[in-house]
Length: 57
Image (cartoon, rainbow, N blue to C red; front, side, top):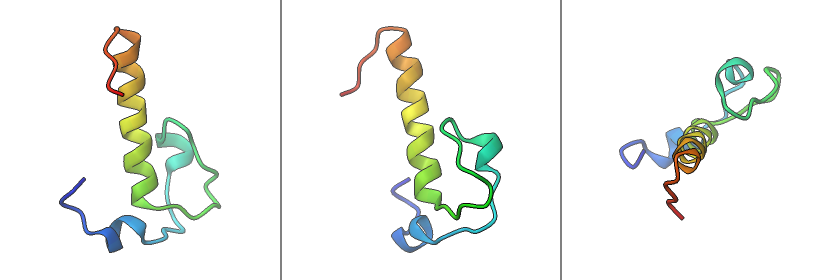
């Protein structure tokens, strides 16, 4: 994630499929960012790690 520029991470993307792909989906008609998707993915991974007893806080 650190290798992606902040401008690219925060650029609004009006077209996406995070209604199908994200752990916490967004409506298809709501613009989003790559940063949202990255954060969603990390949160999902942490959720699975917590399920097996690994806490990362």
